[in-house]
Length: 344
Image: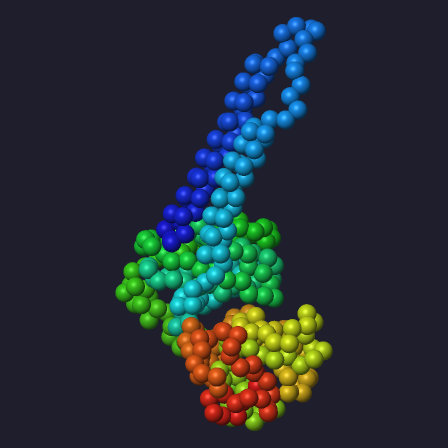
């Protein structure tokens, strides 16, 4: 069971009860009116009632209040599910015909299994390598579509240790029914022991650092801020100022989140950072797998501010991700932490 199980069960049964009572009330009224106001003689003409303000107000106001109340309750649950907390443990998931590939930040990898600690909030950052999938844990009452070429997120907190079914809830091909697995909710101590047994190759960020040098990213992205391409230190969570004419939708700034970093790796011409020359960075589309892209993102996040942490800027100390942080641009922009800014 998860933190959403009780609330979603309550919401479901409240909806069932409300709809059943409304349907029952309509049925009772229908039968009552059919009997009470039936025609008794062939020439009988009933009196014409033009207005009954009390009746009209009753059948408009009462259903409106009931169903708008359920809408507000459902909206509250939806926003709770769609807004992951800042202190959640982030795990990456890649959907592929026909399996789930899971990567933990400590380096452990799984296929069709997901091990999580009980009592800790878990954020899943997910993408698909081919077609649309849907990550569904029925016992946790959570489900999210997993789409190609973008990231979606899902979060939960397991409350009870145990083994829970994992399904793909979107038809994804001939072996869709076999794209199943298990979620193992473990006591924190047991989870830590499991992690230590499965992270022999190092953390996900350290793997990303290897790819960063293997694919010659360090040749242009210098950490001293003087390279031909932006310095990536402190990039994650910052505002990035985009050069005119390179953003299809037109915003002058974007937040450097997972989706932005992924786009810059696979399609660097999509959004050119202001102050840097367009076309310098080659595309890695078709050269990197989704697993490798995730590792690179994990490395870039590791050399930036910690999730939910604070950043010291020229205007003071502000929480990460707030719009009051300085935008990242090329050489000549406002300095950050007393040093000449780099990119991003």
